[in-house]
Structures are given as C-alpha cells and as structure tokens.
Length: 515
Ligand code: NAP
Image 1 (cartoon, rainbow, N blue to C red):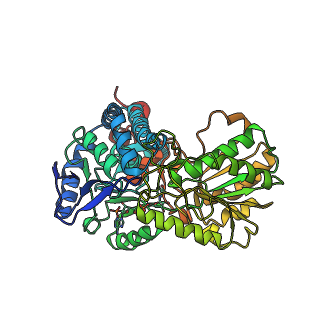
Image 2: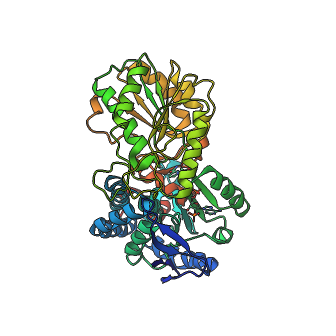
Image 3: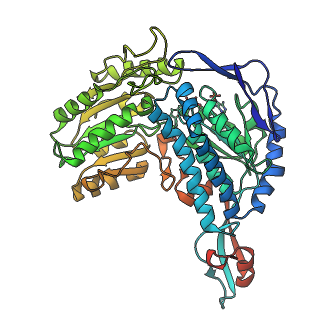
C-alpha cells in the first residue's frame, strides 16, 4: 500500500506508527496510509518563518502570481490523474471530482492573474493618501503588508484539492508561507496536488502535513494565521487553543443554507426551472457534502405541492452507487463515520418533519453487495417551519434537505443563525429588495436566481474566487477569497504618515509602479 509523506523542512518525510488508512468509500478497499508522527512541528514552523516568508516577500506580486500560475498549469497537466484519485478516495462521480480539481486549477489561475495585474508592487495600498498638514507634503496612507509568520491551513474532507489551493493562492500572493494540512480520510488528491506544486515554490514557502496536526498549533504566535475549514465542534476547540497564543484564526464552518422561492415564480418558467435544478444539484452534488449545499427550501407562495412534486420527480432520477460505474450519478459519502452521522441526522430531522422522498436514507446502491457508505437523497416536508428546531440548527452533511411553505421566508432563513450562501429565486424587484436586504446581514453571499441569468449561472453551491466565501454566526464568521480581499487575512493593515514623496517611494501607488 502507498504511504503518503509530508513535505517539511524542504524534504518529503514518512511518518511513524500509528498510520491512518485511506479507503475507497464505494468499495471500502484500502488505498494508502499516512502518519505525521515523528515530525518536528516546531522546526517546520521555524523553517517557514525564516526561509519561506523572506523569500516570498522579496518577490513582487507579479512574481508571486507567476508561481501560482505555474502550479495551476502543472495541475492541469495532471488533471486526469487527479480526477481519478478524487473519484477513488472521495467517492466522487467524475463530475464531482472535476468540481474539486478544476476549482483548484481555476482559483490558482485567478490569483495568478491578479498578481500579474499588481505588477512590481510588494504591498497593497488601502484607499488613497490623505493630506494631514498645512501642505500636501505631510500625508498619510494605509497599507496592507504580509504578516511576518506562517499560515497554517486546515481543510475539511470534502474538497481536498480546491481547499488546499484556494487557501494557498491567497496566502502565497499576500506573501505568507504555508503549512497545509488536508483532512486525513480523503488526503490523496491534496497530497498529489501538493507533490506537484511543492517543487515549484521557493524553499519554505509551502509545507504539507499529511496526518494529525500534532502539537503544530502550540508553536504559533501573534504573527501567525490559521485558516480552518471544518466542523463547528473542531472550530470551537481551535478558538480556545489559539486565543491563548494570539494567532489570527479564520473559521469556515457549518451552514444551514436556504433557498427561497419567490411568490411570483410560476411553474414552468425559466426561474422555476432554475430553482428546481439548483436545489436538486445542490442536494446531490458531492453527495450533499458541500458546505454551500442547500439544506432548507422555503416556498413563498402557493407553489408548495408543485415544488414538492418537481423535486421528488428529479430526485427519483438519481442513481446511487460506485462512481466507477458510468450510470451512477451520486456516489457514497466519504467515510463510515460520515454515513453514521448522516443517518442519525436524517432520523433527527424526521422527528419534526416528514420524509417525502428517500425515507430514512436506506438505498440499494449500484455497488458490490454490503460494501460502501451509501445513502439515498432524502427530502423532508415541514408543516411547521416556524416551530421546528432541528432543521434550523443541525447541519446534516449529506444529500438531505427540508422543504416548507412560508409567507415570511426571511424570518425562517435568519433562524439558521448565519450562513455561507442563501439563494433567492424571483423576478419581482420589490420582493427581492425586501427579502435580500432582510437576510443580507446573516450571510457571506446571496445568489439571486432569475429569468435573465437562468442560462448562465453555476448555482449557489459554486464558490467563485471573485466573490467572498464565508459567513457570520453559525458559518464561523470567516471570510476567504473575494478577489484581493482574500489577501487581507494574511496581511497587517498599517497606517504610514510622513513626507508624501517618501511614502510614495516606500509604498508606490499602483500607477507609480516601475514597469
Ligand atoms: P472536522 O472533523 O472538523 O475536520 C476538519 C479538519 O480539522 C481536518 O483536517 C481535521 O483533521 C482537522 N482537525 C480535527 N481536529 C483537530 C484539532 N484538534 N486540531 C487541529 N486540526 C484538527 O470537519 P470535517 O468532518 O473534515 O468536515 C465537515 C465539516 O466541514 C462540515 O460541518 C462542513 O460544513 C464543514 N465545511 C465547511 C466549509 C466552509 O467553507 N465553510 C467547507 C467544507 C466543509 P483530520 O482529518 O486529520 O482529523
């Protein structure tokens, strides 16, 4: 069996016993093993701080962008291999695997382009310079500079390649060295993406931990950053641990994302079709293991019965099984623990809502008898969404959603306590203005599905590098991506004041950069 190694101190090292085993979740066949036991995390952090940080900060944004561009191209050259690994270890269909791998390639390419646009600059100005004295000579300005530490990236199991690369793109372009740790159970695609990229980056700029984080977080201090994606429970532990050390923490956690169907949307319209397509795609893509997946569906008018009928019909076309079989459209969940949690979550939801598709999640999968972590898509119907508790509180990380009618959908949306994304489907401007502004403080992103964009959207579940990813409250309170905004997590904002000509020479404005 293949042993996955970690990349620390400039070389690939193999861990010691005990090893964790990575499996194919469709067949339960072991694929690889890994361990980080024996790694000196203190030395790795010091290597990043002393070698990687200075090497990156010496480079201009354009040069850092070029590194990201070469990593993106190298991944593209190995795209088929990466897709195969993602299918094998993640239980992904080919389409699901492409979502992860192409997302990684595209996000690196996007930040490569942004780096190119910033050219010879090394630090970003925040706004314009302001006059402070009697004459224009005495001025002040704000600057974003890279923090003088390491960025530790801890990722969830569902997007091993994209998670690794989207975080890396922002940190490296900002000028911070990385220690990147994927979730162990699905690390294969992340490990290969790291292996492809590691040699392209300056020494110490990128290190990769395959396995447990050990005492890594105990090595951190106030100039360091941790970008975490995963469950609220783990996030809670990290908040306590890192508060003592003063390191900055960004959390991307659970989310009870909602879809709202406006009262104006008629069955059979383009907006209606988009709504049905998005809800079913979001429930079943990656077997519902997407932080942005729709978990709650609120129908704002008299269309509840039609919506239920349309969703049930589409869910009935889903073919659950081993993604190696071409007819399969939804694979297993990623691990045995994940299957147990999803089943328990369905049972909890069913204590207050009624399943109208998929029952308790049992399914006869297209796979070897008795093997694999399969679950059916499940749609539940709530007759009392205002009185319900579980549907607004517990994220079931699988192909599961609850449908309800409501004339005050915004109130229900807000009960989710803060989310990554909410989708609103309508062509009625008054309804949209009221609904969107009412739910906006509770979200990182709002997707508006309407007739005019029906043919060109990729749905609410697709995270784009141009737009913010993150959300308040329940979703963790973090912010990633959003174009150049994504660099701020890895930067310190500092005000400079003095002679305007000296300020300009220290930190040129974009139009003053050397060609
Ligand atoms: P998890 O169990 O919290 O694990 C997430 C990561 O944290 C893994 O890499 C895990 O490593 C690591 N970890 C666990 N305990 C740790 C500790 N004490 N110190 C440092 N690292 C630790 O979450 P998951 O099951 O992988 O992911 C599912 C959850 O992630 C879902 O709730 C989902 O909503 C959320 N998610 C959110 C987003 C978002 O962008 N908001 C995206 C994807 C997923 P090991 O694997 O080695 O244990």
